[in-house]
Length: 204
Image 1: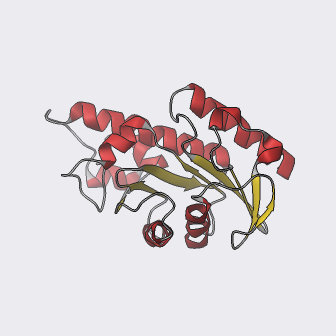
Image 2: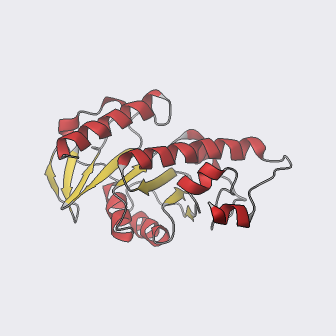
């Protein structure tokens, strides 16, 4: 896929995520890996109104090459790519149900959401909790890189989910699956729940 096509696909997915209420205002960011850097959504930009030509192009260390000023969380994306060489796209949202789970005091920081459904296991898998850092704090990059070595997704405490995949479509599908499973997780709290066993999850 050409860079032009990637830019258009980022705008298409951003609009879809925004229109379905998975992101609001100027929150959230999307990136795609290039051979010599990344494309990332600009700062203070509504994902529902992305102009493909204004998407930021950065080199491999984060210098702006073209487009608008990048998201202040672009360093998070770069850190993720450095930790996971096979992933080609990353999506980070402030989606309601996932953020709600990230604020709970009694979740397992090693794996926030248990294996509720097969598709959650296949698309997301283990989901560790990253400790809270203020938005834009570069220590967040180090924390994300650390957990990304063993997990394709993470939940940022009191902030939201971040997940990558081998292409942009798959990254979007994964974060959508994460959000729906976070909703299920909260709906089921306090109810007797049958999670997938370790054996069932392992086969997936």
